[in-house]
Length: 257
Length: 304
Image 1 (cartoon, each protein chain N blue to C red):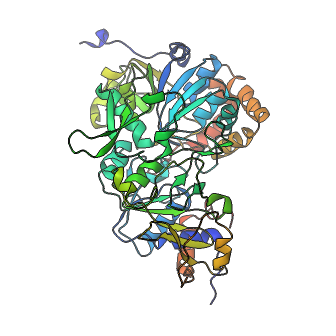
Image 2: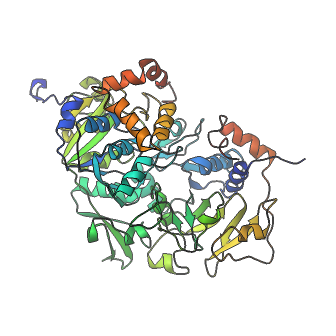
Image 3: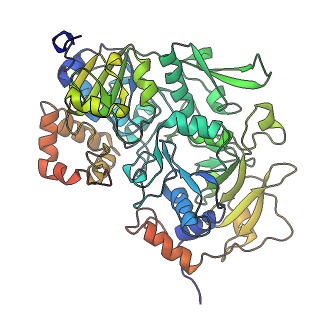
């Protein structure tokens, strides 16, 4: 039987598969949080969900709108603060996986969440780093989630807020960054990962209904395309059912689609 | 000390805001939707403060209000937007006008700058920021934004961020006694460090409790009275944001605010209605409506 799904549901289900059981996860809010919660409710029950505001081992009953939302509090095992989460836990090397989004990404997975347009006279002020730079610097693995829009996949960022693989091999090491950098980029048309030799972005799989050319037409940088590009697995009915239990009012799932 | 010898620190919201001279630097407490000192932002706007500098990790509509009303000149922050709703529209317009300057850091960098200030140490080392434009692009701090050095012990690169000791720290908490012993429920964000880094500390509290209640649960007193200069008792001080165990955020009001701020006219309508159109915080609460506020009250055991 065909499973029906929206783009957001697909993205959430796809991202959730990248969380492994027992991992310490920075989930934030929005789709990444829903993906982490879905992972906990399915294949990764022992994932330790942490919010940078200070919540540790969280299992919210209602989806939080803010990283500091009281919805994160009920049921968590500790509510502390920012030096704890971003300092002792993250900079201490204890975060396995962090989720980030971005307005722009380049071919090394570097991210912009600060300005669109020139720094001196920006067109748009974006939120800024928040904890993003810290997570990108120090999490062992980074999962990047973005809705796909050609203008976001650029040769040169307007502003580099958070480090991906910087200028390629050796550059994270040069700056003493303890995290492993981006592992996977998930959009609503494809998944990308990074070529282990050059650390440049590479097509990993295309979602059902899209072709390799659809992806190539929608990036402004050179994308490495392997000989074989598999189709991304579809969400299961169980995944869709559970994510709607987690977000019954469609706070995140209701948008777009 | 006997009780009579201990200074009662309670002052009014108006008196507290009057202590802030134009051009001051403020640590701004609360994190995201939690314990935002909105009532204090409103009063700074009503008193037409100018050229203030804000130091915080991430603030949302409080920054929008102060930037929109031209109270702030400079911001040293990691994040400004309204989570789940969208970008900071007032900030965007004031940047376009050249009315504000933002020095960007990360959340950890700002928290460490407050920790350094609280410890009375001139800088703190962190492992973030390196290799990015947060290092390369500077608005007004020049070479005093941060420095990357080779660690004198390991030889590894490390980033030094300058500590902050602003003129005032403004922190909103759940409860306080009249001497200033302040208790926070839920996460503290960066308010432990932030409350101790300023030269003067003003604590806003939802309610004042007896000293006995504080001494009955001293583990919740995250800001002891010895740090506190002034106490302001303000119910619903964070509305339309939330205060754990006291009230939830007012999503409808937040969405209305975000929608109105999409245009300067809309923002002025909000400003002239909810902030300048009332005499004080109670006028604001009247305008929001007590019935509505009552519906936002937190329910046990959830805390929201």
